[in-house]
Structure formats: C-alpha cells, structure tokens
Image 1: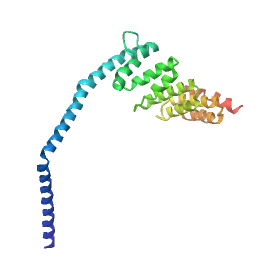
Image 2: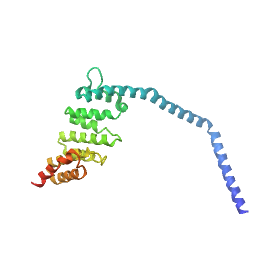
Image 3: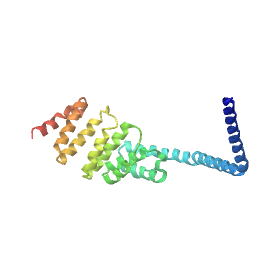
Length: 224
C-alpha cells in the first residue's frame, strides 16, 4: 500500500512538472519564437560569413603565400618579406589577411627578418607562431633564440634554445639547439651550465654531427 502511495505521489509530481513546463511555453510562446529566430539568424550569419567572406579570403591569401614562399625558397628574403612589385610579400599578406593565410606566415616573416638582420621584427613575428607540429615549433623557437642572441639578449636566447629542445625528445635537431644553448652559457661565463648541456648532447644525441663533435667543447672547459 505504501509503495502504491509513493508511486502515485511521484506520478503527481511528474504531471505537475509537465504542466508547469507547458504553462511556461504557453505564456512565453512569442518570446521563445523570437529567441529561436534570433538564434537561426546568428547561425546563418556565421555560416554566411565563413562561406562567402572567410573562405574566399583564405583562398586568396594562400594564393599570395605561394608566390612569397617561392621567393623565400630561392633566398630572396627582401622580396619574400616585402614583395617585388608584382606579388605581395609576407608583411603585406599579414596586413591584408592576418591568420587567414595560415600561421606559417608568421614563421616565414620571422625567418625573413632574421636573415635580413631585422632581429626585433623577427622576435615579434616568431612569437606569434604557434602550431601543434613539434618539429616546426622547435625550429621556430631556435630561430627566436637566434634573434635574441643577435640582440645580445642572452637570457631570452638561452630560454628559447632550451625550449626548442623540449618539444620532441627524439628529434635529432635538439643537439643543435642544446649546442647553441651551451655556447650562450659560455658567452655569459656560466661554464658549469655549458658543460652540463654539452654532456647532455653527448649522452642523448651521439649520432648527430653535434654529438660527434661535442667532446672538443667538453675538453675545452674541463682542461681550463
């Protein structure tokens, strides 16, 4: 009997709740309809912008990137960065399209500036580059370290080189990043830190060119 009463009470609660919901929708039907219409307008607007504005701009930007990348591959860093009068350079592409051309535009612009000796501009562009590719992130951080090193900002250079070696422990390029970090340590007089980095190269990357050659750096410090 108690079980039946409990069931009836639950049924009454459910019925009351359903009735309350129905009453709410009846009282607020027009308001709810306007909210749904507004949501549909927003969704359609987002779709329309992506379909007819963003996508064409992205395709156009990537077309411009192709020409600038060709100049970069040929070593024409000035033309790649600033254009040659016929096609846009990476700076123009960033100004006109931003990230629509892809995040690699910041890496290319940073590397062009680095090769042209524009180290502050290189730092500004390379710091904007952020992708999930660990190998590319390592190279970008190394380039950032090079720019800082050229500016004699050794603290940030060292941090960038060390960070470059953290993205993928199996990456043989890490030996080069650690070597650069060690050389910065020597430049600033921290030979203990430099020796530790040289020995890390020797232990972890013995098959690389840096690993084969690193013993001379170790001996230079240990024999002082």
